[in-house]
Length: 159
Length: 454
Image 1 (tube, rainbow over the protein chains, first blue to last red):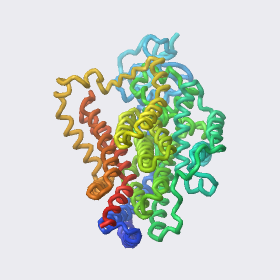
Image 2 (cartoon, rainbow over the protein chains, first blue to last red; image 1 turned 180 degrees about the vertical axis):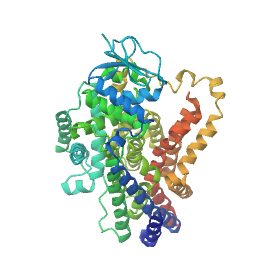
Image 3 (cartoon, one colour; image 1 turned 120 degrees about the vertical axis):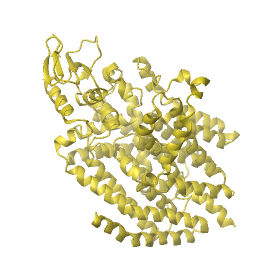
Image 4 (cartoon, chains in turn green, orange; image 1 turned 90 degrees about the horizontal axis):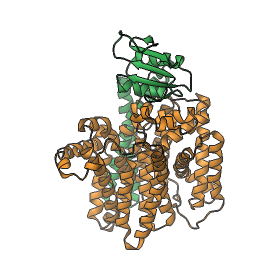
């Protein structure tokens, strides 16, 4: 943090020098004093903020470049168990098959519909090849012929 | 990753070739030397045209295979073999060498452009709207080989705004095709390229109208704005929407000022791209053509109306596809039957000041957009106080109408206002703020004409 602050402060004389150059350039264009002030002020703010923006971008790039495959796969997910369960569903349901997903939360539907592609979700009564029931809590019994893939997640292949 | 970046670069070279052809047909450049200085404009023309064409191709049943994209781009590029218009459309680059201050500003913008692209190449697919909607649709197109009605008209997928247009998913799907993989990191470069191209295109579009120092200072101000730094590579559609809308508005303004028909053609193209990017683009484009209609005067109203109709016509194929496949286009969030019901509207009047206040705050918040809006507001006042009222009135009316259309949606929309404000207010101000940033040097020049006369 102190290094970052130092870099940002050290840049400011350069920013001021360039902003002064903008002042001179606008003066040569005969823009008038008020516009000269406004144009220079815009340049000064942009130049003053440049190191902050550049360091933010560099820090984020550095952070993102170090993400592992597992972290990338679960970016944006609300829980690790969601990602793990959908990954197991991907392994179980062949690509191109259809499935019907009955989930207790819209977030699960969003994630599963994206991550399970090219498996296609269909609505009730559309003869899905796979039926998945995703309950909020483990336990109980699943649909006939289903097996529990993860706590509360039941999967059955249509006969 | 390198192979994926090269694949995406190849797709974008195809867009550039298409854009170079179209822009040459429109007279934006003649010799290759002129193309070099208009490269960013040509690229944006190409992306807009190819994005719209890709949406139509999907509707026609194509899968956006690599050969289809290359053939389509080659056809568009071929339009440049026979330029239709004579005369210079884009202003000539400044004859004298840029001063040191301008060179420093250009270097700063270049640095930000490189950093934007590097950041986007590593960005994870973490934004919910990106993974759940935009990139999800792109994956569906790439993995299911086109517009599979089981997904794009499927009941289980109704949460992903099936009625939203397909320019962004189509461009990303093409990116996946050219990468040969569904790389959800590198694909963020696609949207970022649009933002970078806008930054590089603006000074060229304004070369004869504003001092170069003012143009590059304004571009740098946009480039370092924290909200754009975050959004450019986030995989969302708000930044591309802002890019296309700023370009459409800039071309419309130039058409009003100079009357060159090519600028009206470009206005139609970029307005069509706005319509193909996001549903919210509809009211924005309506606002644009309303302002142009008023500003055009009696003599050019017919051309304005024809241009507006042409832009809207480009969106009809998608609406027909939605209708043919039984997708609900009634927009569940906006109850159209109630928007003229006085009792419904009166009971929600309190949403207007809260919604408008929040939008204005998000637009002027220094930690999001620095001083773009205050600087533009001061420049508008200065220009209006001078004699040149047309430009500041055009820009401020356009920005206000865009914000008003969002406030209207907040007023009549079903979701709670807090949901809207938490979920979208930060992003929907991108279009009006980028518009004001793009026009900032124009407004300064308009004000300068007055002060230099004194």
